[in-house]
Image (cartoon, rainbow, N blue to C red; front, side):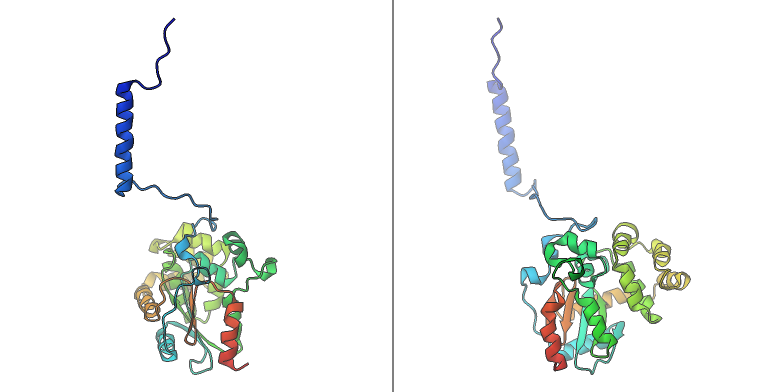
Length: 273
């Protein structure tokens, strides 16, 4: 009877051992990188990375800015609503493709739930109050001024931002904003249009229910707002905003998708109520 052979002969064992040592050296030197396994939930089709978590979770420090600086950004912004000389001036720096901007907008409840229970809307049995609709109410009631500026927090929102500029021309900022911040808008921006200028027709068609498609396509194709993206980023940076969403209520900063409950005391103090 033939004797069973050992699993590794001595020459083979030497070869395998050498390979293991070589791979270990490559890994330790950073040439081969092994990513850690994540257990987070994907938001629709976009991965939410830890670095994108709002400051409510990361507690990142806020820069010190003055009310005069906030008003200067308001005055230089393309999208601005209300009286800058009122008691409360609100700045939102956002990216229409950013999952946490959608969370703060409150128009994509499915995404809120996917990201985590702390962001589940009150209407869905949670405790989160999306801040943007509440801030809009203040603007509509003449209690606050509001400016929206673009910052590339997720990377696919350039076309969406330009659509908002175009809509603002005709007094349709909120109508277009709310549609872009829906589940369908999120999918359109992150999986279909992205920043592709040749997809302006797709964007215009998507918004046709709230904005004339021919007017929107003409505006997008004109390139009139291409440089505005860079200008808005510079405005955000002047306030120390580097992620999205970023809010300032007067000179109080909120870096991330805070619940309106966290902002309410600042609002009341500003309005004297």
